Length: 280
Image (cartoon, rainbow, N blue to C red; front, side):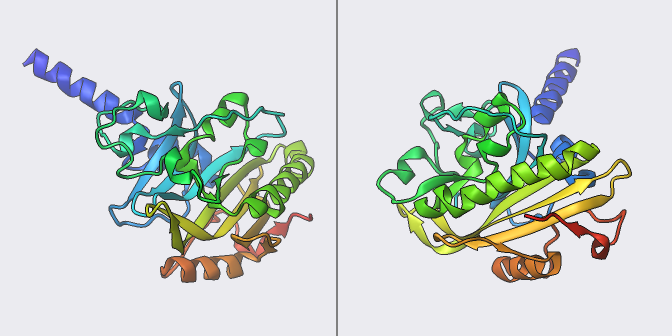
């Protein structure tokens, strides 16, 4: 009886530390404004990941195992850290094996059996004419450890190279600098969510190429009210992303995802109409 109780306790503890979780609002809700995640879809193809490297959770990702790309990654921005980029990419062991490590790992360190059934692998991008486009980017990471943790294929989607290295990268950097100037000096907590919309093409007959990349931010004051916010969406081409109102972006995402509503942040403490837009 004592042995059974001990096994049960170990099971519960290991389940609580797993990267792939049942409810990431409970497990890693610190990356969501007021602890509330953007809209989640109920279909079993979607998985909730508390992105963990070396037993540290750095951000959260809502992942589509059918299209093998994220829906979105959510994270906090804490200023410009001058983090270095690493060249190797991790994968999420638990997407293919529930009993695998809770930490992201390099492919060579993951058992081959079932590897890649539910996620992209680095070979999918070879000769694909697409970059591995970060959702949480290195430039917005809050530490070197976090920057390293952004290099997981569950935080990436096939991106047009000109778009990734041009207009989208420019937007990521402008956001980081402006948020550093306008939100952090006031001790606002900065929340960002970045996502993609599945398109009609794929690479390697496995990984769906997004039609759009989008991102939104919200700066909460000490009363958890969103004082500064903004939203952008761009086609996966070398075009400048469009600056959208909250209503317009939500409507566009509702159409793209074919859902009745799509929420970005929890605005329960203040009506969205009172938001101020961050100037570029």
